[in-house]
Length: 313
Image (tube, rainbow, N blue to C red; front, side, top):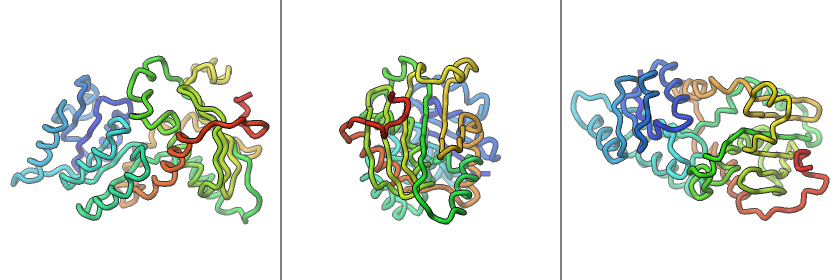
């Protein structure tokens, strides 16, 4: 059994990490968040020590590491706001724990090199959550693409629409300096998916970018991609709204459609199983998608013409 700590225990994604820790037979022994509404701990780990100050959390972990007879924390799950991820990874390494960090690992790509250096200094790993790579439909698609004998680029269309209310824009998620912008906050794992499936970026264009929607195109060695990301409920298809669905995650390859709107609930558990079995995705795995999203954020928009995503019309 492995012992975990957690930063960002009151966050939206934290319960998925708590569930994954429990379902893999491990224990969460210490958690931290400035917000103290963490009753969810009672559902998963009622005996977990809780701190509202990261300094006291840090001190507690250091005490567990140094004091004879105590068992140190071996992993720290990082569910804090995006702009704190790299700092919290550094904290994990300082207390000689591996870091298992939510996406994005960092906001600015140049911070990745420092994390690699710190891994070498402390002899610990930094893992990142690239859960879509472990989705059964994605893995089947990866195998299918690998079996193809070259050929022309595929025409690919990515659509991700997930409802977010006014709160989103008043929180850190709506602040580009803290979230890294809309494509970083909700799109990073989809961009990672596209690059993982079809290869590195050859050309990128942005056709729309505001605080609710972002859209553009990519040319990759294996695909021409039209992509659209949105947090606007009205962008959901009428059929999705009629079924009470709040999100649409769709990938179309030519006339073949993949709907990832379901099958997300257990992916964090798969991530933990992968890491604990000696696999996992590290700093270099995250590099290409973070660099792409940073580029998108700083690219002026251009007219889509006939190349844009259909929802732009």
